[in-house]
Image (cartoon, rainbow, N blue to C red; front, side, top):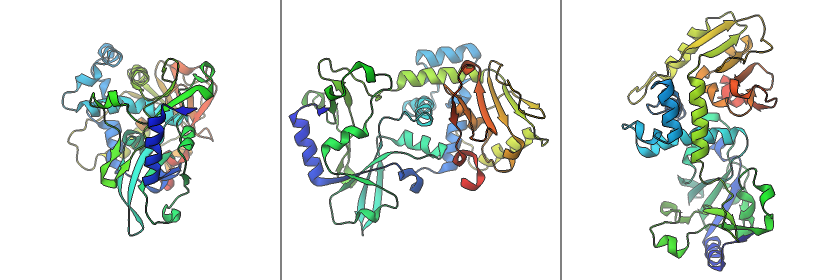
Length: 366
């Protein structure tokens, strides 16, 4: 593994002479950068959100998603925000399957020996996904050099003192491991002069006087073939298209509870909608509730999503049924005790489960 050229190495040495970098996987547990309830409503009920796109029509939905027209369809939502709604589908997939390749880029100023003036980029969309899932997130923290103690951080960090340590923080695309020799990989953290002349700008957080070590690409020197996951657009479109197909079928809920399940979820939904409703649209979907004494051995043989909710879960859960739909991906999803399970018709033969972690749905861990 090596850097693209000597100029990049000189630039990195200069950055390390002016800044300190710290890596952590516990950053999000101690920092909630987005108001949770507002972000939660955006994910579920934003006018251009994936959950509302299915309302157009069954045929038009797939056409819009798969052709990329989704970016242009909702004129009242900005292009960047429309892109984020799709990107979140793939980002959720990557997070839940532990496939995130790059840490979130964070910078701080140190004022009176305390962290201040947080800046996040790239990684704001990932941050919102981690926030929604209530799950750990990897972060590379940048601070301008100064006199402060490492224990200023309220979580465990590892200082990155040498540029070569960066190699281990940025992963390559899954499935590419057999196509290259690791020692041949070339890393680029800075735009070349020809790219800068075209208007490209290296990432920098001016407020904190920090150059940000964003990875531009990881490649193989002989053909500059990119093997990292910088561009997720095609994968995101594919995931969003699959979810749209699923949402166009009835959601089958199975439970051994005796409570009024429809009213239970309506109450949760009303709680999300207490405040400002402008710019939001309720997600209306046909849910069929199936009451049964025990979980059916085969309850995912419909064409849509099927969800099992054990009676014990209703007393500790605070999530709406719709929120569990983010766990629909390539594998089946289940809590460790099997009391919540999410299935879809496209993964009948998959035996492994993605864990629905307790921090996601337990009211006492919220």
